[in-house]
Image (cartoon, rainbow, N blue to C red):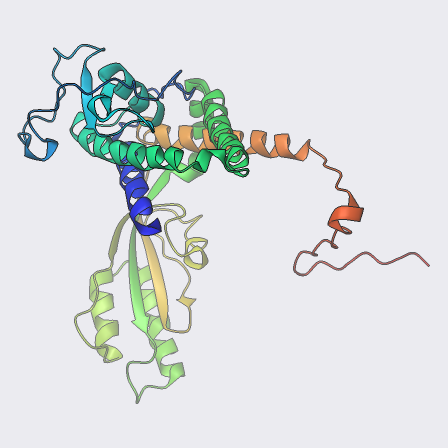
Length: 348
């Protein structure tokens, strides 16, 4: 039973989450306020649907513009409240009702995915209707669970509102770009890698001496691909030597242990010889360029917006100082010290 119910909810959740991925980034978010009503209008199903949904033409995915707001878009024969006469047992969901539902849960969902939502919604209505007949909503814990779900919705809506409220202005985006220009610099990089352990007969000091010579030749301006091939042959590494070109790299995209050696290099310069357990590395900066503001403005906007909303959210939580009754909850456990931090000593 749980597996069936979870699968129904999953269909609805997957459909909604997929809409978030297909929403254009520039689309203006709609209000997160709940619709006044998302419940279907119950009416007698006097005329059953003449064509089952499963046999509807595949190309008929777009709602007809001739469907009036009061027209039924979903008809569910046999779904009704307890003690309803069989002749009157049915539920209809109008276009207006269904679009209220869509506006509340996924306003930007592509029209060709609405059928999936409709089918999942019908299954949820069916299970929920049966729950009402079984008296699930009359159980003592039911109002508490509804309250918790309401709090979750309010909390989610608060996060969205805080994001909307903290959207930076174009001037703030440009200022951040100017003041953090180093973050938006790209480097065209080449790298020579000299493996340490491929030649059983080679001694560590021999490979180190080879790496030093290759480094000096790279610093003198010799071709990096040629030097890489020579190094691979000298240590008898299997396979073809890798290309030295790493393309254009932004700051933060390389191994931090290596990138710090590149930070202050000018075009044409090479790093000192870098060593780890597997290999020696030599990097060369071919050229540098700035990423245009228009190419990163959305990234900056998202970063500023998220950081400001996070700070506002944390400040809101820090301003709340609950006092818990220790007679009921017990004493507060001691706070865990951060790693490496020594606990304060008592004065003598």
